[in-house]
View 1 (tube, rainbow, N blue to C red):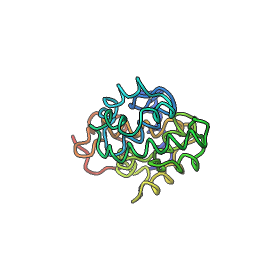
View 2: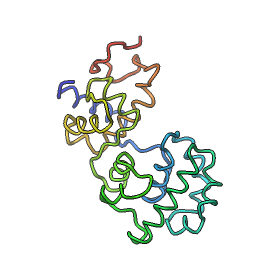
View 3: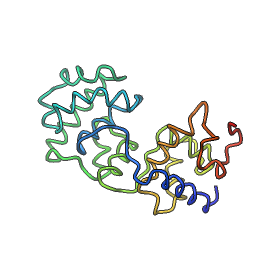
Length: 210
C-alpha cells in the first residue's frame, strides 16, 4: 500500500471514530491488565461478563491477593484456560505489590516480566494507560494488515514492525484500535463486509465480496 493510501486509510477510519476505545471494561490500569490477561483466546464480551462481578470486589492487586486464587476462579470459570489465568493473575498481583508498590509499571520490560503478560498485552497497557504509540497485533490486526497489503508479515512481530514503519506518526496513538475494530466488524475473517468498507478502494485484497 502506498504511503498516501496508508494516510488516507487512517484518515477515513478516524473520521468515523475519532477516539476509538477498547471494548474491554476496566476501571484503572490494574483492572485493564487483568482483563487483557483474561482475554487471551477469549472474546471481549465473555471477559466483560466475568469481570462485571469481579471488578465490584477487586480494583487493586492487594484486593486480588485477598480474594485468592480459588476465589478468582469462581468469577472467571466461564473463560477458557481459567485455571492458568487465575494462577498468573495472582502471581502478577503479588509481584506488583512486592516490587512495584501495587502500581502497574509503565515500561515494556517490567510489564513483560509479569506472569501471563506477553508483548501484545504489554503493548495494550502501554497504549491505553500510558499513551504510548504502541501496536498490539492480535488476530484482527494481523489479518487486516496482511489482507489490505498495508503490512505483510508471517508473524505478529513482523507485522508490528512493518506497521510502525508505514503508519504516519499522527495516527499511531489510536492505530491498533482502528485496525482491531475494522477487523472485528468489517474486515471479518470468513466473510468480509467489503460493500460496507470505507477503505475498500485502498485495499489490495483481490477477493473482495460484492
